[in-house]
Image (cartoon, rainbow over the protein chains, first blue to last red):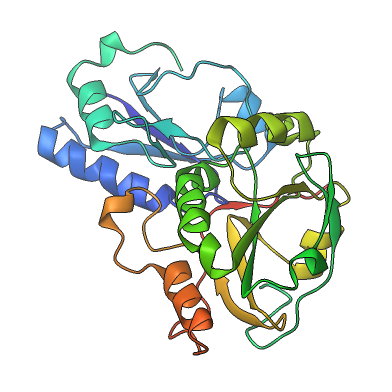
Length: 108
Length: 177
């Protein structure tokens, strides 16, 4: 399984998101447990990487929370939690679902 | 770092609001406390906290507290922060405070605000009494342990110094032109 973590440094919670991702991978017993960490620094890089905001997490190339739009930019990403609240961080549930069934996610 | 530190005087401003009126800081000179909040539409941190700001305004309005929100982001790069979108956001979320557009970014630069959201709380005399974030948990309002803005408001309304006068603002950077 290939897990990628893309972030933009200006968004302050990327370290928490990465820590959460590693925790969930440990809990889920993900083989290898390696995360490819990619720092996105330019708008051009954002377009090339189809980066819709920080943090973006992909499992085998699939976004864990497929974005509705395709505006690629150096920005912070809003995640809608199960109860409807907006959070700058993806929830553990989102990560767990993606790690358990990566094929069900959509390309990100 | 912000240009203002606790003890400094407010920088006056006059900006257009989503209600199509112009709002000056001095319009609120009769208030017991004014919280100038740099915020925006698109930032998830601003969006995570905006309901709490609405609650704070509702809770403290009768005690003479006024929140004034200002969006200063470059709308060419972040079209979700445009003035028409600000109007939509204010209506959708039921903002009970003015939401002002700092198109030239002069006010944000004068305050040297850096993040959205970022709060500057002034007392009735226009002296900065608290600067920083809303509370210590953007992700879960039920898990907040330190209600910085509410605690600062209680102190100011009681004529005391806030026990915490400054915290690090947490949010997206202001998008400069």
